[in-house]
Image 1 (cartoon, helix red, strand yellow):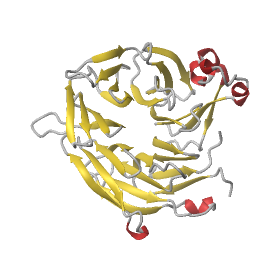
Image 2: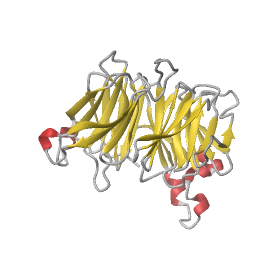
Image 3: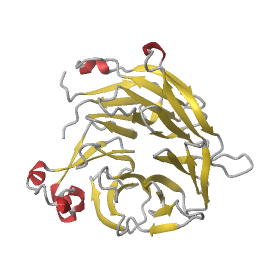
Image 4: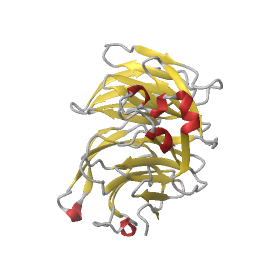
Length: 357
């Protein structure tokens, strides 16, 4: 079978999040999935690709190594390193698990090491969703339906800061801009940058109007090498490119698919390739046309980032489907080395080993 083939496996539950286990030296053979809309049976699952050689067809179906029940829909999964993974739910909780037993092939499992059961709530025991979480250097930040931003030190296992009432509309996503600055996005197309170095809550930037119609920002990603560039996905399927040095929107890109973007991610090694998945069931690769990249002077740093060239982006941008549209929401994707995985509401995970770049 072709090395660029796509493989799929139905796992029996809707996949809301999927993440590769990091591996610095080799392509990862493990990943985790988090389910949703499965009544009281939602879980965090740890999987392993089954092939140990170059026979890609044997990688799927993957082997289920462990399953940990979750009290609610899984809303986000983030690895802290290659051992620890953080998971949030719509029940307001965040838990951290350690992958243990990797030297014992028959007994690899997830072990809970930290938990915050009521991190987000409306008070009086009424829990609410933890909408998103972000991790930077063993600091964890969360936002929830209670309009609250929590900052947790994973070294001390203590909640370091709590900022309340940080938004006038529901919060949707979060990311670290630096290790001391957190960017929060909401459903009114607003972004707020919070400085965690001050004792009291302080906004260092307040950016409004992602578009003229205030379309909700649904997902956010930071450029892998030029950290001041932020990319946002919208409910109408557009991608916004922001320069946080000037708090300005450089350009807005559209694929022609008006369905809401569910996740946005860069290729970690080739940041001129951006990937999005959508509520409409499409997994897209946004990239610069090769003819343009070949003409760039390697010494011209201004043009080394394709996305900065607003005059070129719309004429040199290539957008292609990575897999055939499935016409059900694709909720999550992740890329590690040259392999991609995504999860969807059709209870399937899709795996592609060698991406075409």
